[in-house]
Length: 113
Length: 114
View 1 (cartoon, each protein chain N blue to C red):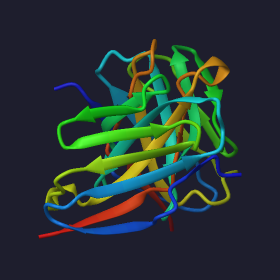
View 2: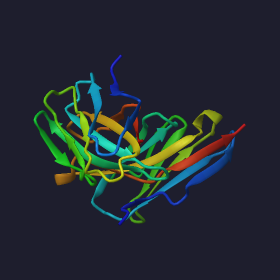
View 3: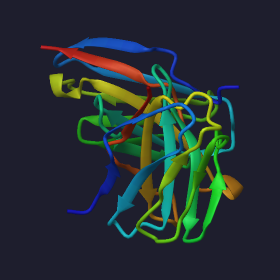
View 4: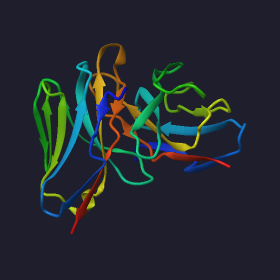
């Protein structure tokens, strides 16, 4: 079955540590996205990538970094510079061309110990 | 500056009745509009979309209406079922340099009572 896999589902981090969230898709989609969701809020775009080895900052990129070395993979690193990292993180992918809906993984919940 | 607003945090409806979820926006550059449904601890699932050249799109029990002059989008669910209980997000996109990016509303929690 095609889909988007995010791992782990729950992640705990000590203050001052960097952590990397995994996102893999086998939908053969060109574009991939990372969002953050906080309680009572919508999804806010962190980074997105439309092609391998290229990515753009979204609305809240500070304290985060990404890489896109393979079409299938778009890992997100939450760095120690992110002051409020506790949130639900969602990865999505879509076809490029026309207005295509984004398909989402089931998310990773990151908590600070 | 919130470009997309869902002003009702929650909505409660009886099974079999109509559910109407609303979404308002300020940026006239948005030209395609989507609705997503989300259960707790899961990712959003795409429901239905509409482009700016249309004012209505229907898919089974779900109908999306677009009023461009009022910058207003709505989702109608008829008849509502208990399994429809979830958080509903509107998401808006624009072409040009913003192509591919979506701006989400805050979400509306729909509860359908048996």
